[in-house]
Length: 465
Image (cartoon, rainbow, N blue to C red; front, side, top):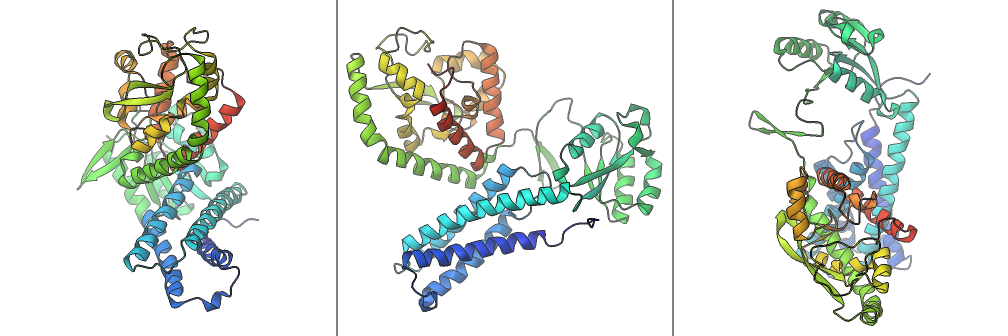
């Protein structure tokens, strides 16, 4: 029989795993760089750096609450916060070394240490996440849950909590004065007046209150009973009348304010992390791929038809600001380039252009846009000005796409919504993917989109023409 209850050691295990990996990466990187010289012969400066290394990590994970993994936390959010924490740790360490003018510290040692640590901690997070889920699915580390209110909201909550055994919730049932409206009458434990007697005799860990907020007196009574019985309470408000997505609640002193569109990239640190990645990624492409590939493509483009190598088009960027978007020219020079998109049998597209568009190589010069700062590697694709003007009138929330920088690739594109935008339904789906990306951005999501983009390039895409 697996013992029921909560593991008091999960956070401790998490932290000890992090610290072990941090120190192993630091020491092993030292051995690699110094050809396995004895570690006990290091200078006092390295000992101090090693101590700073550990203290800084504990402070960073405490600040970002990296080890506070809730039961329904998404894996990509866990990985994103982990990568962010490693980046902040590296910046603090480098700043400390710069402050003491530590030229004697090996940059190669630090680089190897962070590469090893980042790889190791991502694997550790994955192992920890899936092991804990299997542990909970086996019946351990679960919470007994009661739902007050068996209406639509309460039933939705019931279905969510039961949708994945890995969450570790065991729903005991509902309390409701109108049990006939429940989709699960067999789960009704009694009316609201029966709640107090039930929780005195049965171990309950968490109560979700899913009755209308207008029932203030009833809600206060339930909260008071739960508090007196050491039961945690969560209130599930009903926003179905005007919202059907994730929202945030902020407080302006004691005034609750509902944020209907959470934007992770509104956080300064997230913007810095994304911009740092954009500079590094685009810089590598421009340094290691562009120099040898550009002359070959430029020659082929010139041979295919007269005209410039690059096609420069005004497009809508962040905050709807106009910028010059760069592409390799894939069409014969024509007067309709700023009005009409290419179609599958478009006679304007050259033989080289078809190859470029099929492989996405026509977008390669946009890494220059990324490096300069008017685009990002990942984001909503920028549209020509005429399309922005037309679709902003036709499609609700179209302009929301312009809250962030446009990207070379995006969530809509890896889900098949690329190519011509003549079909309004497809354009609507593309916008929905873009808005979802803005509201749910994470570093892990960007990496996933980049991987799928590269994968699709080799596999071939139906709408790439």
